[in-house]
Structure formats: structure tokens, C-alpha cells
Length: 400
Image 1: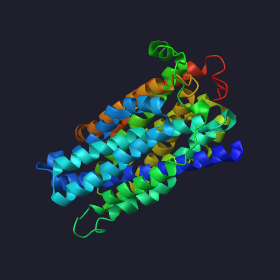
Image 2 (image 1 turned 90 degrees about the vertical axis):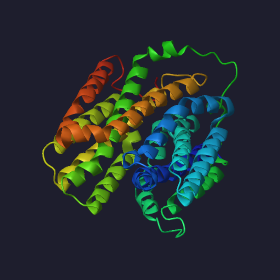
Image 3 (image 1 turned 135 degrees about the vertical axis):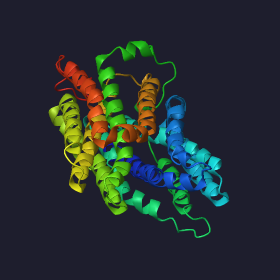
């Protein structure tokens, strides 16, 4: 197999695994709150399983990166899918069967472990791709979420699949899909340049973090992801408060997930043509447009426009930030840099998820969106600061 075909096969494996993981994530976001409300001793704890999944991701993100630095991407991904995906899905299924809320929370914690490894699929795409194909490879892997926009809600709705364990079927499916992921990952071929090399020199993290590109890559991905998750988590509650029905909520959320991942088919090409700076700034402007749409009405159309813009902005900022991050470290530094990056991102995401409900309750939908202008402004100035520096306008992943 020639190298070009080899890298395409690797990216295809990672993209399919991205789809399988996003199905699990969408299932948790859609169903675990409902299951939590049924199992929990206190209705106020209904969304605790979702928060615990995010906490599990925060807890294991850096160790996952350092573990893969030691054993390689393939073994690390298989470990995450095995213990996190298979283990978390099965434990959640059993917890529902025996009606144990805390066992269900433990299953959610393991699914957070699955997420912490799966979030590195995008970085693995950079490892297995040639420099000219790198930005497109990362985009194509994230494009795996397009199919999950349909498969995730379908799986979450299959609550009667196993009649004796109501709502347990979707979690058993998560475990089965994780087994499929393991089979595919066993065929992943990471080139020597993407595997750990003992003894390579590595700069201290303080020196790496002092680079303006690292700072902007982190700020773009973290703020883009946290704002997106906060508003996405608040949207179903806000829509119900505005008198919209469950079917309309499902419609909006499906369009939002599509908007998050469909642009991945061309985001890499846009970055290759216009530069990372232009795409990051476009993502920031789309966040501003999201706030404008959300604060100018509460009809189904306003929610649809706001959530579509929010999804596209996340795509530009997350992919752009991920690609920019890949230009600031060597192979020896990869584990700690990517680990710290995702640790910060998911710490903010977990915080945003936990705060979304209370902020919506105290501020209301319109004021909640206006509050998001504060972090968006910080993001805009950070991008402009780096954009105006030498050569950032045309920054490419093969020209660090």
C-alpha cells in the first residue's frame, strides 16, 4: 500500500471512530438526564450523571495524553474504548437494570474516560497525515460527527429495545459500538513520526506556553467549546420556557449537531486557502452573530438560526485551534501539550455545563446570550493580536 493510500485508510478509521464516539456522547446528552431523574433520590440530581461524565473527562484528559505518549496512539485508543466505552456502557446498562443511581453515575464517569481518549482522534489525524494533508485530515475526522447527528438521537430514542431494562438499550448499544471501535483501531497504522521516541529533548511547559500561538490556540478552542456547550445545554430549557414543544427541541438540536460537523468537510480546505487567522476570526464573528440572533426573538426560526451559527462557529474555532496547536510542539512534547490543552478546554466545558441551568434561571435566555459577549470579546482581541503579528495571516500547519 503506498503512503498516500495508507494515510487515507488511517484517517478513515479515525473518522469512523469519531462517529461511534459522538453517538455515545449524543446519547448521554439526550438521555442521561431523563434516566438520572428516574433513578435519583432527589430530582435536583437529575443531570448529575452528565456532569460526572464531563468531570471524568477533565480528570483523565492529561493522563490519557501522557499514557499515549508512552504506549502509542493505537494502544491508548483501544484502552479508552475498552475501559471507557465498553465498560461505561455495560455498567450504565446494569445500573438501569438494578435501578442504582450511583452505579449509573459510575458508568457515566467511565464514559468520561472514553471521551478523554476519543478527543485525541483529531490530533492522531495530524500524526498519520502528511503536512499537505494535515488540516484536511483533522477536518475529515471531525466530520465523523455528521452521521452521529442522525444516529445519536436514533439510539437515544431506542429506549424499548430491551423491554426488561427500559432505557437501558441505548447504553448497551454504546458498549457494542465501542467493541466495533476497538476492532477498527486494531488496524490503525501510526507512522514512526507519530509514535513516542524515548530520550527526545523536550522543552518545559512554561516555555511552550509562552508562545503566542499556543495561547491563542488554547483560548480559541476553549472559549469556543465552552460557550457552545453552555448555550447548547441551556437551549432545550429556554425553548420549553418559550412554549416550544419537545419535537421542536429535537429538530433544533439535530440541526445544531449538523452545523457543528458538516463544515468539517471544507474547513481544512478553507484554512489551507485563507490561513488559520482568517478562520478563527470568522468563528469569533459567528459567535457574535449567534448572540444577535438569540436576542432578537424567541420563535423557532430565531432558535434555529442561533444554534446553526453556534455550531459553525464551534467548528471553525475548534478545528482552527487544534491545527494551530499542532504547530507549537515537537513529537516529544506532544503528550503534555495536547494534554494540558484539552484539560483546560474540558475544565471550562464542565464549568459551562454545570452553570448553564442556573444562569438561564437567574438571567433569562436573552441576557444569558448577552453575557457571552464578554468571553467572545476576549477571544476576538486574542485572535487580532496574533493575526497582526508576522506571518499569522497565512499560517499553515506545514509552516509553523
